[in-house]
Length: 255
Length: 352
Image 1 (cartoon, each protein chain N blue to C red):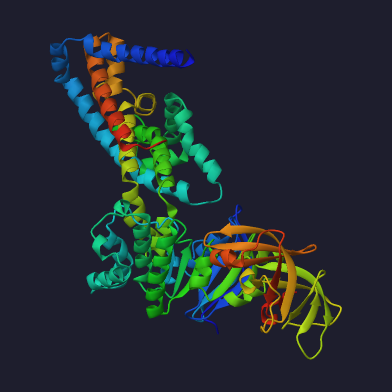
Image 2: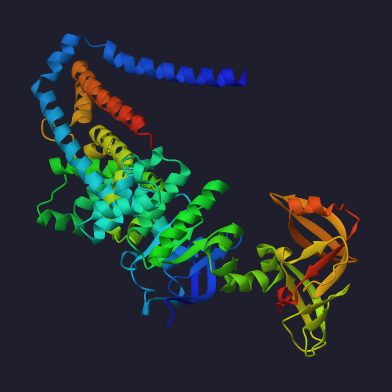
């Protein structure tokens, strides 16, 4: 009986989710979707989403690999503090993260310094990348850390005893052994980047055909009452997440 | 100057600690380390390779200090219990991995040579996961040996192998080592490994090196009851009675023993006896060279594989004797019978 009720609850919630996801695909007509996808706004949004999403994902992985490895392997002063701060954006509302970034990149010394280096993140396309980067980074780091945790350090020890430096060992041994986790981390980061809304809205602004990525398109069109466009961007986002979760499950890593 | 020297080494990894570890090895020595789990043995090996920084103390190899040297420059090899083979490399690539760092030429032949001497040449194209434990172990040995390390460290390399495979691997290893004169430090739980391979023995407990010496020395003169238990010797408390021209006479309570070791009369001592050094007989023997003949009562027979331990008692004092099962059958004794135990003075050693 116990087992039955728990399974029933699980199925009930799954069913609700399936219905919710399904309604996204059932409500609009195919013709609508086709037209919407080829509209200039959607093409702009899709293209911008892909470009910023890919750029952010690459940047995220460039940072997540070394940070994940450092957190997994090394003991250093202040490690506990570092872990807490890096993990914080996971629990943070995206809007608050966006606000914090807006303040930092706005009128502070850091913002001015970056500005003079040509990096203006406020209400710009670069801002979209920055927002996506900080939203996705904690997830990528977590996955990379647990991936490296599963790489037997003794294999690395043996490699070093055979004459290879730490860096060579990382390239020859640790990275290839972490390839499933790296793939999963990349895919999840990409899905997170594409789907980031709150952070992008606050830092880059949600201006029509300027900093408009897919979630912004969904939001703007819902506000105008243009359901067709909103649903289409919803479907595109959903497909991306589906593919991401599918690859993630295949890669068999834990967070 | 000895070939390899560890001087007053302290390591602190919170969960494991090593304190005041010092010992020296000559080139070609084979040192066996035994001790209970959690004694810090693996940490010692990993510190010698250079994975952990010592808190204090120094390590020398071939006359130069290597305490601060990076592992990749030490030329010390390590073999783990679980082999630690590189899973995405073939057997050939695993063995060639270290060679590639050192040389460009003749890698193929060198790998084939070592593979042949360890009888794994037919496995070179396979991936480690498709090999049995014994095969993986030989690949791990080949990978470490092929770069001709100055010092080879092995952490329970045979513990996952069945007894027959163990003996086979020991022979193969001895053959390869003899040709290269490699100095070895080997951790094991199996005393047979020590007898078969080593010439030096170290006993560790709780991060301390309790005793270090030649195999003979540690097995026959264990410095404490704990070590005696570990190496299978029995220890008796006694007092030196006479110290004349002949062997030393020691009163161990219920009987007397003569020993080639000696100290001042009246002094309290501990003597160590090894169970395989004692011979037994049903009748009182005559005309034999053993100086100690003790009348005892057989308490019980404890079979242990192809041999048995006889537990003998003289009032309160107990002795254990190792005999073959065949000998037990021929003796035809049962618990309660009286039996004579004989031991040479040369095998009665004073330890303290």
